[in-house]
Each structure stands twice: as C-alpha cells, then as structure tokens.
Image 1 (spheres, rainbow, N blue to C red):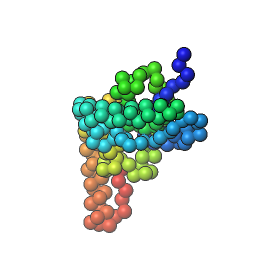
Image 2: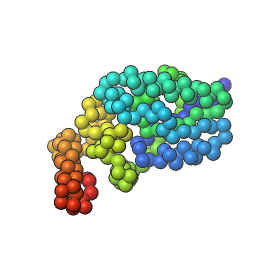
Image 3: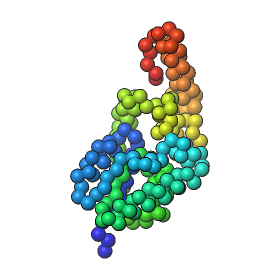
Image 4: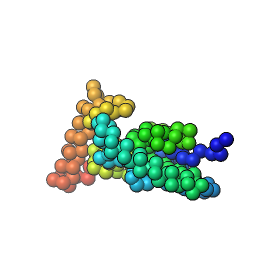
Length: 181
C-alpha cells in the first residue's frame, strides 16, 4: 500500500493565493515547499507552448520532474505552487512522475479580485512584465476565449493598447498624470 502522495502542485491563476499556500506548506513536516521555482515555465516558453511548440515546455517538465524526484528520494513531499503548472508543464508531469503519485490543490479566487490585484501591482498583458506571465487575445490556441468588450477579444485588446498609448503620450508630452487602463 502506498504511504502518501509524493508530489503536490497547485492549479490556479496568478494572484490567487499560491504564495500564501506555499507558506502554509512550509509548516508541513517532511515537505519541501516552493513557489514558482526555476525553471518557472513562463515567458517565451509559455508563449511557444500556446502556439503549439511543446518541446521547450516538455524540457521544463523534465527538469521539474527530476528536481521533484530528488526531493522525494530524501523522503520529503515535493510541493510547488505555480500558476504556470496549468499553463504548460503540468500537462507532461503525469507521464514523468506517474499520475498516481501526484496530488493537486485547486485555488480559486473571485476573478474581479484577481484583476484588481494585477492592476495593483502594475501587471498587465499591455506591458512587458505582464506578457511574461499572462496570455493576451493575440495568443494563438488560447485555452479559454478571453472576455470581450466589443465584437471581438482582439478588438478589445487593440482598443486597450490605443488607450495605453494615449495615456503614455499625454503623460510624456502634456505632463497629464493619466494612469494606464
């Protein structure tokens, strides 16, 4: 009989409490808990995966599996909270670690609260930092269709980009203190 789950991952969006969950697991006996450890699985690798090139993400999954297996060999449980799990590398881990050895915790937070949290830290797909973590309507093969404010998600995104440019222009040229959308 199997004694326990060896690997635990969180399924969540960003800004949903995964860093806090990691701190809770810091207090679990015989558990090594990590929050978005390297390689994270975001940025260019995440974008390539969303466009159909799975090899870079598969490589990250292999690296994560090796790290997790090394932790399990010490007798500890490997816990990782990382919203890139569901965006890519997590799809390859069952074949590398064994589905029966993996547990998941699903974190859910109100989507409005998530959006406000992203805005509070200045993270948006309209800026470089945000594109490292977030999909945009320009992504091909999007797993979930983004919400639209007009007839299409791309048109809504384009309109937001135009407003962002206007805000930048107003701040730079006319010294008007406007905030990005």
